Structure formats: structure tokens, C-alpha cells
Image (cartoon, rainbow, N blue to C red; front, side, top):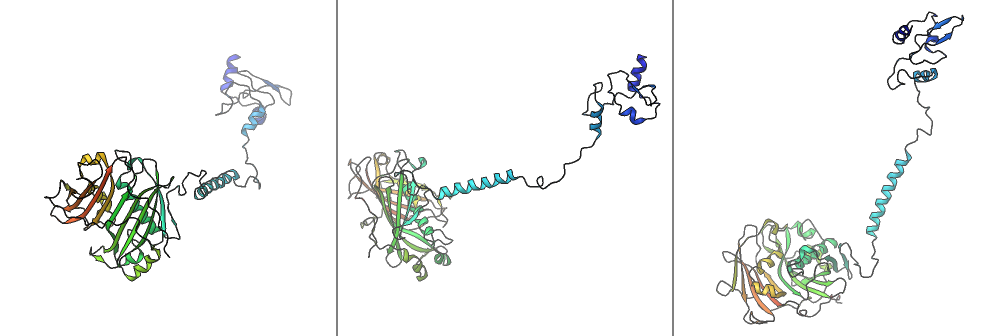
Length: 418
């Protein structure tokens, strides 16, 4: 009897009643390995040999008690929920998150544009963008002295200051709406292949800024003769207003194709003259002639100087700031260590290309403000030339002992002349 019951659990036997539904969905539950009886309509005792439900994947394990109602629920296929207006609406949470993100981004941009200093000692121009001031004739821009712009004595180098001068000059042209497709050239200049080249530069340094200082640079342009333009700069401490550096330069036009100097066309003059400021130079011109020096008169000579690719500007010649570094290559090291550059005057005579080989010559001035034996100020004459002898730049430098009092008088922004 036990063997028959076990066999009936694995090998179902058709019910003699012929009622398949009754044997499959009985009113009693299946027992583990047991045989249950149920009363038929005729009242006879029948053996339900198919009481044990077959095993199902993810269903109740074989041998456990399962109600007939559970089996019914598993066999019924679930139908999707009816489509209504509510469950067809979009996911509002995702839409709200996207709108919030866009609003926060727009608010951040607006805060940057509408930034105002919270303390009186903070900068007016915190982002260094620069702006036009003084009746639209002076351009002003702030610069922070970076750690890579200082030298061994922890102050900004003369090349750093020169780069600030050049940057404000170009930004002035751009902000005034005069920038064409050339490097600092106006639209009319670009049509005629004309560019600006500097012929003379004079710089007076009262004090060198240090790391972390913020300098405020003002620049403006004026007429210089019939075919020249003068550009002046005034560098001051942005926090205290102390004058740090004054510089003045003269520029002329050159055809970038023929590399020859050119007169200022009337169309170009009409573009730039409305931006001229009638004023005296911020630096009194040093009218002393720059003497020519050679191998016999030079005290120090540095040879085999060659431009690198990074020394060229977009006009395909060596940037004028690079010339200062080459000139100082031949300055005596003891003076470089004990003195600092107080003034420099440069006369540019030729441009220099990538394949040039140069020599730097320096001579101690005989009649000047001092000599190497004097503990005070020292003056040098300089010449930068090609190896074959053609001159590129003549120069004069004046040096003062480090930590000395400021050199010269304090500069001021010129007032507009009537």
C-alpha cells in the first residue's frame, strides 16, 4: 500500500470518475506523499492519485502544502492596469529636476556677471577683463602677479611688466572695436596688409611688484608726428594707488608683405584719431643719443643667441619683449645680483626672424650716473646685432642698488586737454 502510494505520487493514474476538473482542482489540499480521499457525488470512496501538484519554476517547492486557491491564482494570467488619464501623464519629477538645473546654471552665470565686491579693498575688475575709462580714451586692466612671473629676488621681472604692457595695448584695440583680423591691426589696416611695429620704448620702474600683488595698468594713445602713434602706460598698485612703472613708446606702420615702412593711410587715420588723447608723454623723453658699440668698445659679449619657435608672434617676427632678455644676457652678473633695473631705453632698428643668430654686447658707460666701482647707480650701453654685424636694437639701461628709494617722480594719468 505504501509502495502504491509512492508510485502514484510520481506516476498519476487517471481518475475513474472521468471528472478531470474535479481531480485537478479538488476542495482538499495535497499532503506530503500521502493519499487523500474525497467524497464523490455517488458517495463512493475515491483515491485522488493526482493530489500532488507538479513542480513549477519559481513556484512552491514540491512536497509543500499548497492551497487550491494558490494554484488557481498562479494559472491566471495577470492583465495590465487599465489606461487612464493619470497614468498616461509624463514623469513630472524628471521635468522639474531639469528645470531646476537650468535655473541654477543661469543664476550662477548671472551672479558672475553681476559680481560686486563685498569689501572696499577688493578689486573693481576682479576677473581682469579690462574696461574703458576717462571719456572712453583710457583702457584699464588689472593683473595679478603669478608665482612663475617672479625672479630670484621674489619680484616681477622686467619681461613680466613688458608683457602686461603689450596685453593691455591689444585689449585696448579690441575693446574699442578697432581690432581687425590682424594682430592689433584695424580693419582698414588689414585690408592693406599693414601692421604696427615699435621703433622706440622707454620704461621707468619705480618699484617692482611681488608675488600676489595686483597691478592696475592704464594705457592710452596719442599722435606722434605725421606718421606715428605714441602709446603710454601707467602701472600702479591696485590697492594703494602707488605708481610702480611708467612707459612710453612710438609706433609706425609696416607692410607685412614687403616688410617696408608705410605712411598712415587716411582711412586708417580716420579709424584711430577719434581715440587719441591729447597729452604729454607720461615719461620725459631721454634725448641722449644711443651710441654705437662694437667689439672694441664692448666690455661684455654674449654670442650665438638664436630665437625659438615660441619667440615669434603672429606677425612672424620675434616679439619685442624677447629683445630685452637677450640684451640682459650680456649684463655683468655682479650687477644683476646687487642692483635692479631702474630704467631702460630701446631703439628698434630691424626685425628678427626665426633663423637668425644674434650677439649681445654691453659696455659700461664712461659718462653717466656711475660705474662698476661706484656703490650707487650704474649705466650701461647695449647693442643687439646679427652675427654679420647688422644692428637690431640699441639700448641704454640704468641700475640702482636693490632696496633703494623709488626712482624718479610719481606718474599720473594725463587729463584730457581742451
